[in-house]
Image (tube, rainbow, N blue to C red):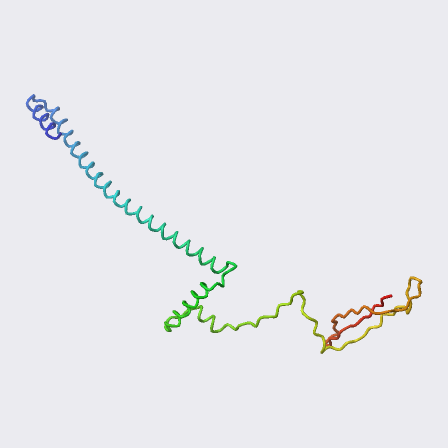
Length: 186
């Protein structure tokens, strides 16, 4: 194309038109500038395309890494909080990490410290009825008179056959005792 402009410039010189020659020179300069801008834009677009491809690859690899980490977190949460969290696989994995920590004495681990200083709590015996047995043998038993009549109040005149015993632990300031109340059964 540049040769076409130069031919037009020569033709304008032959015709002797000074204004035409200036216009052709201006157009050639403008065309050269546009070609330079186009080549710079093409170079920049190629460079940006390469960067974009590289960034897309990075995004894909980071997404894959995030997915792996999320899967691992879900696995660890399931391991820790599932109903069967104390399975043999979990114990084996924990014991292997404890052994790894023992093999590296220079490394300090928070799990090892917590294990060293923590005291194991004794297990309480499980009661089936939901209440602990009353062990009040060492307390003083005080019998409280309730003042009921010796015969039945309905008018049949029946005597007291037995008593319903109600034991409650009560306190006198700085003194514990067991209050025993007998209620007659007629």
